[in-house]
Image (cartoon, rainbow, N blue to C red; front, side, top):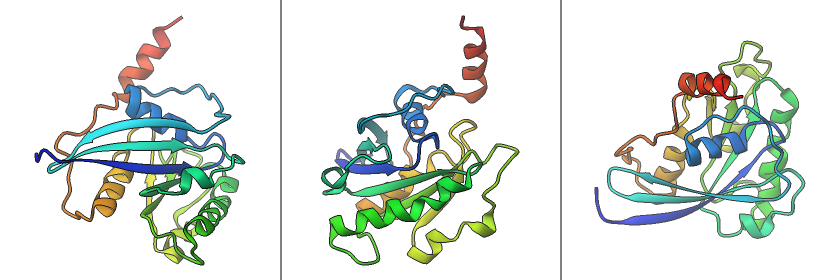
Amino acid sequence: MSNSSRRLKIVMFGDDRVGKSAFLQRYARGEFLAEYRPSHQPELYTIVIEFNNALVIFDIWDIPPGIPSDDLIRGSDGAILMFDLQRPSTYESIPRYYTNMLPVFNCKDRVPIPAVICGNKVDCIERKVKPPHITYHREKGLQYYDFSVRSLYNFQKPLLFLARRALGEPELEYARVPDVGDQMERERRGEQDP
């Protein structure tokens, strides 16, 4: 690994209970926290990831719905827009979050930073937002991932995508995959806690 380090500011949007905070807490603490605790104000998570030729420090702002966010969006290097595959209304909110970013960058159609849309809870049986319905990312030229905070399916892809795009290094790879905990071990330990 090279000695270079980069700091990236990322903003994260999505409706309540889609898994934004769980995603960030999984990186920050290596635990899956199944209990929902609503965020009432923007919260900053700093996540350090070692890639093959750079150490990247992600400053990720978890921004709750309805909170003024222009100042947080300004100067961002990337964005994550998350929805819940079990709740169609959360997918219907994605265009609003994206469109709200446009004026901050003085844009009419495309945000000039890399943005990724994540459909969380792909491992749940009752998926209601099916692949043929997920089209917004294609209309706007954004990246999309089905993923799961719980089972870790495609879990590392959003931050890898953002780092590659923001740094302009398409060959960037993890030097060491971040330890975000093992889903089964965490669930067992959670069942044993009083």
